[in-house]
Amino acid sequence: MRIGNLDLGNKLILAPMAEVTDSSFRKIAKEFGCGLTFTQMVSAEGVVRNNFETLKLLSFNKSEKPIGIQILGRDPAIIGEAVNEVSKFNPDIIDLNSGCPVDKVVGKRMGSALLDDPQLIGKLVRKMKDNSNGIPVSIKVRLGKDKNHINIFDTVKAAMENGVDVIFIHARVRNEKYNVEPRWQWIKEVKEKFNVNIVGNGSVFTPQDAQEMIKETGADSVLVARGALGNPFIFSRYNKLIESGIDPGKPDVTVVRDTALKHLDYLVNDLGEIMSLDRAKKNMIWYFHYYNGVNFILDRIFGLTSVSSIKDLINEHSENLINQRYGEENLEINHTKFKKKVLFWLTEMDEKIGAEIN
Image 1 (cartoon, one colour):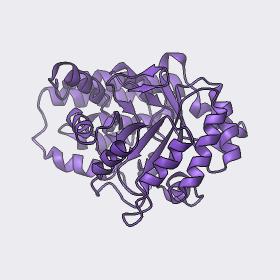
Image 2: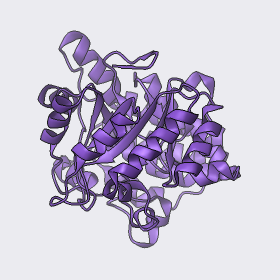
Image 3: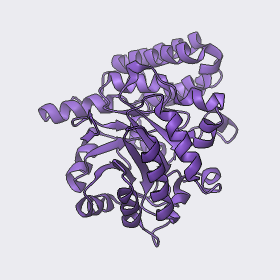
Image 4: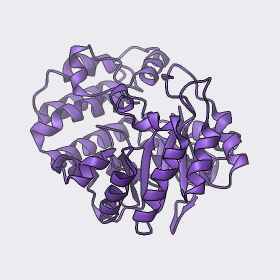
């Protein structure tokens, strides 16, 4: 797929995810063959106000390119000003979040609340195009408010008429959680009806899922979100599948261990030891939830207070896996819970460690 002057070929794209797609996560994804990553979502108003935390979220190293920045807002004037500022960072694409269903976002009439007003989306896209200084513009959307108000055609039409370059379609409506299967057929219908780059999104956890989505829908590429958590291997596996027709399969435990520890080192380098601890814990769990014995980590990791102790735990757990010290478990149960709620193992008190990904 081409976006402006950027040619991604057949590579997959990493979705922007709050509290997840920081620099360390993006670096790992790129090392395993991801075609395009995104920073975490940032507030357009925060950009305009030069809010330090906002600017920190959207900063990136040139070595991370190609990379996109996603902004959140609903005021055309503020969006235009924010995009002008964001363009100075020279990202490869600037995206408007029109799909986030989180209550605190929708309550401020942003994110997927924009789907109620396709004409406003058109105005926002026009402001983005007028102020992006030539950088391609995209929007990430859902199908509509609910299953009785699917208006994806109106949304795509309004965005296209105002110059959008790429549309990312999450094939669920706003009020649907992850226990509802995505309706990929809507991506197919949009692709057949409109001549614009369409990227599909929704429950892609394996290279075969991505391949099947493209085959079924005709989408130009696939945006991977939850499927990349603890699983940057999805990108290299997909690339190999496309190149050779063979999926190398789930990586060896030693590869997972080494990747997790490298990710941990990146986090410490970016955030410092204290600030990286909570984020490191959830990332380490994600890496091993596909394998037996995940409860060994869950029972211990939240009480750890140093990076060295987390490394010791990962090494011990990996050694247990290598030596088959855990009994066989029904991993599909874990995976099903994971798909419904990314941090399914946390108690209500523990949820401060990380928000559910939506």
